[in-house]
Amino acid sequence: MPVPRLPTRTAVVLVVAVLVPVNLLNNRWARSWILLTAVVASAVLVALLFWAGGSWTELGLGRGSWSDGVRWAVALIGIVAAVYLCGALLPVTRGLFEDQRTDALTGPEIAFKALVAVPVGTVLLEEVAFRGVLFALLCRLRTATAAAVLSSVVFGLWHILPSLNLGADKPTLGSVFGHSVTGVVLVDVGAVLFTTVAGCLLCRLRDRSGSLLAPTALHWAVNALGYAVGFLLR
Image 1 (cartoon, rainbow, N blue to C red):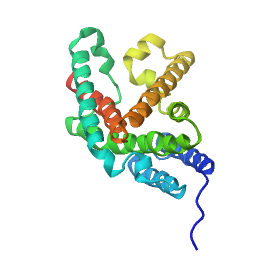
Image 2 (image 1 turned 135 degrees about the vertical axis):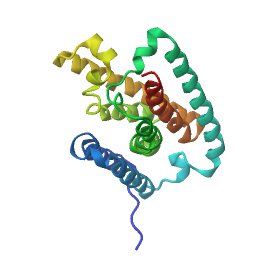
Image 3 (image 1 turned 90 degrees about the horizontal axis):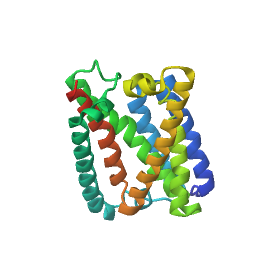
Image 4 (image 1 turned 30 degrees about the vertical axis):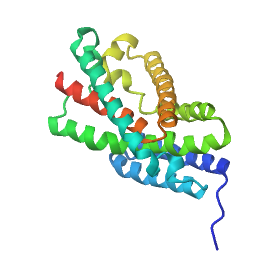
């Protein structure tokens, strides 16, 4: 007997229901398991999309989208690398690359973060969840613009827990906002707003390119190359 197709609205609710405990696992309960959690959660989310009648094309990974996606990916990585190079060379922006989370890491450890931890533990899950599955499902119910905003708001809220210590991890932010409760709240709210706007941009890339590879490449480049440049500037 065939399994009944999952209604789109129910699928959206289930996607959010999966993301809540995953966020707690990654940031509170089982941080050391983040790579496994990300892979399993990504698979579950894709399964929900397919259960709701989705496809690889709707996810942004259809065969016809690969060539355009790769071209977008290469161009975006190049742009981020150029911007970071300029930022590293200018004294006024060089301090933005300081990050106490990586100050004590060795070269191989930075390479692991850039090539494994970031793409698997962060980018894979977030792109599949927010620019892949959730965006695709919401596009069935709303316009692409509305879907991008709704998905990005959830993406912003996703960053509440990981941004709580951002002021302490980033000396530049800490010096501006301080380390009081008010300062922590301001930094966290700023991080949520920033990631919401970033999510809209990534959704726009997903829609414009027709491929999930474009936002995935930009997301990886911003995070991973930031670690690399910060390490080189130490």
